[in-house]
Every structure is written in C-alpha cells, then in structure tokens.
Length: 47
Length: 227
Image 1 (cartoon, rainbow over the protein chains, first blue to last red):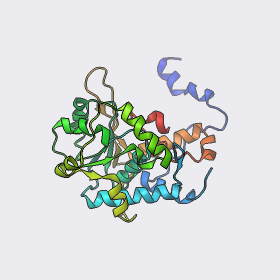
Image 2 (image 1 turned 90 degrees about the horizontal axis):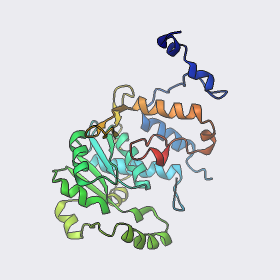
Image 3 (image 1 turned 90 degrees about the vertical axis):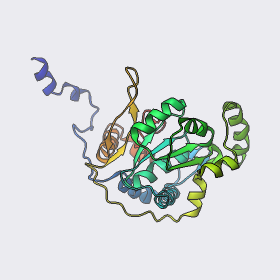
Image 4 (image 1 turned 180 degrees about the horizontal axis):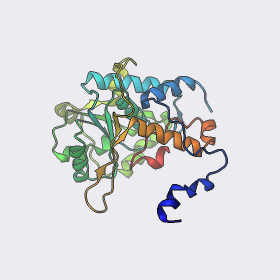
C-alpha cells in the first residue's frame, strides 16, 4: 500500500473510541443562533 | 459560567451578550467590522466575543501578554476599528498610535464577588504594578467607552443580522509567529460550529457537563481557557 492509499484507507478511524462517528453532523447555524438556543435551553439551570 | 465563585447562568449570560451587542451596534459596529479583544480571562471576554458575533462582526483575540508593537501589528492587519480592552492593558493600545473608532475599557473586578473584588484590587495592583490605569480625565479626553456603561445603558435587543454560516467570517485568531509576523487564521461560523461538533463527538461527557456551549472561544490565546 502506497502513501496515498494508506491515507485514503483512514487508518486513524480504528483508534476512535466506540461511538465516535467518522464524520460529525454539522448543524447549519451561525454561532449566535446556536448560543441563543443553548442559553434558552439551559437558562436557569445551575450545577 | 463561574468566575472566582461568581455564578452567571446561561440565561443571564445571554442577556449580557444581547445588551452589549445592542450597545456595540449603537456605537456603530456593523456586520463585517473587526472587533479586537485585548482581555484577560474574565466573563467580559465571553460576553464581548458572542456580542460581536451576534452583530456579524469578526472577532480577533489579542494575547494579553503582547507588547504595543505586537498589538499594533494585529490591529492593523485585521483592520480592527474597535478594541475591547482591559483597563490595565490600555497603555499598550495607546502606544500603538492608531486612530481607532472606539476603545471600550473594562476592569477585571467587574464580575468578581464583592469580597474578592476587594482582595482583587490589591492582588492586581501587585501583579500589574508597572501598568498605567487611564485617569478619568484621560478617559474623557480620549473618548474611551465603558463596558459596564454599555451593559447598563442598553436593553437586550440587538439588531437582527443575517449571517451565512458558510461564508461569513467569525474569528481571526493570529498564529505562526516563528517564521515572521503572526497571520490570521480565517474561520467562518461554520468552521466554529464544526469545531464544536467535533469536540462533542470525541467528548460526549461534555454534553452532560453543560460547559459544552463554549468551546467556540477558540483562539491562540484562549484555547486553553474554554475548550
């Protein structure tokens, strides 16, 4: 296997912990949109 | 968010972000502008960071250990018109000689609990003994703004700004100063959202820790603070 083939085979994936996806889902949001949503969701919760 | 024992709920944090964003907008900050943060580790960093992004402005975080020469390079290169600055660091901004549209000052003690605020003054005086705090006359003469004045004066009603996550720039951290002057890494909103998604994928426990909203504050100076 040459270097390019080795790269394309993504050998690093076998070191990912169980449950970690190969590619995460990226929501189509701006940063402030996501921050506002999260702040509303956890608005008053404390540790 | 907890700062030396002072707790700020996410609800309150959102309100502070929106108040400051409203104040920035009223001072003329618009989508596409660059806002520089020259701050220590403190809640004002988080508030200012997200307030600028709320307006569609770009954030460029400046290391608080930079000299005036380094500060000048980053301000010029990023075309920052606005600097949100720790009061004890203002001298370095002043020494750049740049004609900035607005400089907003803040003190580390503003979000400390009452007792620590008192202790904090003597500790900061020792730590930054050689630093010059601008006098009230200097603040007035130079037209410097107060972070807390903006927070208190404005309601949490920032203008609605359309942001294209794929195209609009969010952050300009500066990096790679070993072979020359530092250069900006240009990060869009989608880059920042992807970063958060990647962190969450590898760090599922963060979902439970409720700290997970904040790995956005990524920069050459703040990566270790918030990620």
